[in-house]
Each structure stands twice: as C-alpha cells, then as structure tokens.
Image (cartoon, rainbow, N blue to C red; front, side, top):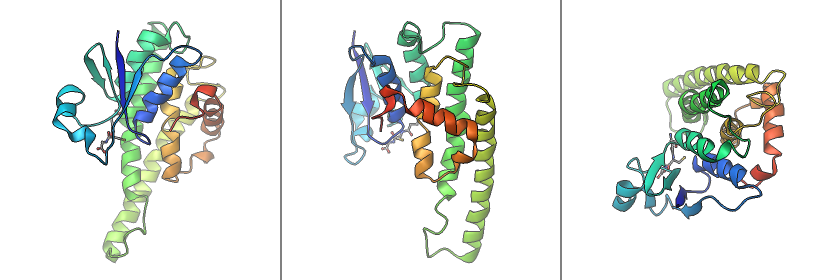
Length: 214
Ligand SMILES: N[C@@H](CCC(=O)N[C@@H](CS)C(=O)NCC(=O)O)C(=O)O
C-alpha cells in the first residue's frame, strides 16, 4: 500500500497535514510527504497536472495510484479509512453525517467567504486608487465582514455548551475547521468576539498533534 501526500508549506495543504498528524500521533507514518514549490511552478508542470491534480493545486493524496484532491474530500476519505479505529471520526451513521456536514460547510461556505474577505481586507494597500474605487472596496469589505460574522455566528452557536463540534468527541471535523484559523488571523479577522469559537480554537490548538502544523 502506498500513500503519498503532496503539500506546500503555508497553504491549504496545512489542513491535510493537521489531519495526518492527528491520525499518525503515537503510530507510524501513514503518508510519505512530497513537498512542491509554487515558486518553481511545480504544480503547473505537465507531469503534475497529468498525474497528480489537473487543477494544479495542493493538497493531494495519491493512494495506491489513485489521486484524491480537494481538502474536504481528503479529510473525509482519511477519516473513513483510518479515523474510526483511532476514535477521531464517527462510524457510519448520523454522527458521521454531522462530521461530513461541517467539513463540507467549511470548504464550500466558509472558505468561499474567506476568499472574498481576503480580497477586500487590505483597504489602503493601493495608494493609486481613485476615491470611488476606495469607497467601493470599503463597501465590499463591510459586506464581506458581515457575511463572515454570519458564518462565525453559526459556528459559535454550534459550539455552545460543547467542547467540540460533535459534543464530547473530538473529530477530524474539528481539525479541519481549526486549520482555517491561522489564515484568518493573518487576514486580521476578529474571531475573538465569538467566545465559543475562541475557547474551542484554544482547546483544539493545544492538542499535541497540532502544535507544529504550518
Ligand atoms: N478547494 C481546494 C483549494 C486548494 C488551493 O487553493 N490550493 C492552493 C494553495 S492555498 C494552491 O495549491 N495553489 C497553487 C499555486 O498557487 O500555484 C482545497 O480545499 O483543496
């Protein structure tokens, strides 16, 4: 059996790195790490597009020659294969559905909104903007912030009175969503105002497997 993990530091691949670190904690490595460089154009090389990911992105895992991309699909796949016995992913059934719901939500709804927020966050970065352009950007930024707050409100509410998204059980759904927080801090999104998310982020971030994730 061969499992390869293609990653670049400080990228979305950090999600899969966090998931693998949890699964490998106290056990032998599951996946061989293959680092690619965006600067060198590794992900745009024909060989990468043909054999690893036609989208030219990381993360990717290649399991026995089958390539699996999209971080949400990877988390769900690894959870299914290795997470249940390690008590990091629920058995098939409604609890499994809950974990999948959060993983997919974070990639489809949250990540899309983070992308929009990131576009407008550096309000004064471009000095040569016209006043109208600046105003437009400000309005877009305010709208994106509001949408971010709405999504964080949903997350905060889901964590009310709970240690983890599924209650007492820490799962790879927590790992997956927690992995977005570092990037949000870089964007200076004020997530601290959501008390349940704040406490949960600290709780998850204190896990030994997640200490060195970039
Ligand atoms: N929806 C994808 C997004 C992956 C993605 O955007 N990856 C970026 C890094 S953050 C990438 O590989 N970029 C390639 C490049 O910049 O050359 C996922 O969740 O896996």
